[in-house]
Image (cartoon, helix red, strand yellow):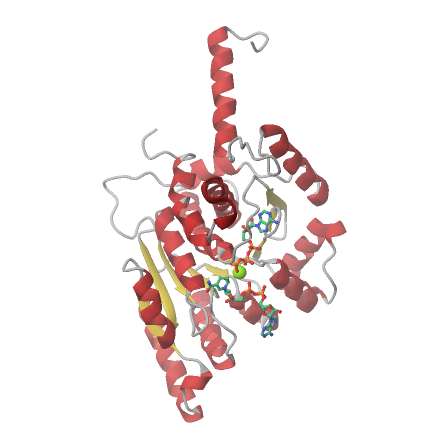
Length: 368
Ligand SMILES: NC(=O)C1=CN([C@@H]2O[C@H](COP(=O)(O)OP(=O)(O)OC[C@H]3O[C@@H](n4cnc5c(N)ncnc54)[C@H](O)[C@@H]3O)[C@@H](O)[C@H]2O)[C@@H](O)CC1
Ligand SMILES: Nc1ncnc2c1ncn2[C@@H]1O[C@H](COP(=O)(O)OP(=O)(O)OP(=O)(O)O)[C@@H](O)[C@H]1O
Ligand SMILES: [Mg+2]
């Protein structure tokens, strides 16, 4: 019994502790990937030691404070309208993973703006997505068509821009110079309309070479993986990644680009707006199958939109962009852990997507 507590109160404390442990990933029986509470604490301590003291965010409280209730008076669109700019001849999975993850978490509408080649393929994965085949790669057009096609792309995106709560730029975009030029124009329009942007994948390749696209834009979130982070550090800070000074360098990078938010993905996810670093190191999965970053990008778009709505109602005291990143990171890692419980080594990105709903439900139950 807990000293000074009645048996009933002690039982309540015990139940609450168990609930929080379950929310953060649960107990696990695997020998090598033991995920008991002690292991969880060790991960937290390790993260705090590598990134500085007490960086770990209270992801459960954040998720509860920003996730909207399912209120029968709300209409379609109020829980979020997101658009993914990505998808080309090589990559059709990445934009699909981002866009469907947004829907599975509770966004109302999810669009994909991609190349013509990719559009039919993406549509065939899911009838839930609204797919716009508007982008072109250099190989499919003549040089003298480039001006008119570029203008047409902007015209098409402009029809929709003001309706989106957030854009995800880059999953499966490819690196064709003409296509990236069109996407730069889309980003400039998004800024003019104050639409938040999550920049991932090849969008980060673009931003590493043209940081002015996001410089000084507080509604931009960059979500680099290990390679993308390395490129950003080299281009912006003119040095190599230094994990001994991980937090300091991350802050310098956010300041160096100027006022953006960075979510650095890895064993722990580190998030900063240039002022303070937060960490999410709750247990995820030892599987590193491709596509998990795409889930994260779509999830950040949703939680960021929800956090902005809460902030608009005056319910938050903290930067909503940071809260959205923390929430997305925690939900993805929990979903990855749930999927790994079932599928072990054969866990795929689509298995993790199937666990997104349960992952959020266990923290923010529809009916509590
Ligand atoms: N199923 C899918 O369709 C998936 C597609 N993905 C997409 O794949 C693309 C690449 O993402 P990664 O995470 O692999 O990116 P990384 O930057 O981690 O690595 C990409 C590869 O490209 C090479 N590379 C580096 N610089 C290059 C350059 N200038 N030109 C050409 N190649 C270069 C790297 O050596 C590496 O092998 C992104 O668009 C991403 O969204 C991934 O999200 C995984 C899943
Ligand atoms: N070593 C790790 N241990 C635990 N979780 C990790 C590890 N590395 C990455 N993750 C988690 O996986 C998610 C995706 O990160 P990852 O580095 O795989 O992105 P990515 O390379 O962009 O993925 P994608 O294949 O979609 O492009 C992150 O949210 C991160 O929390
Ligand atoms: Mg990626």
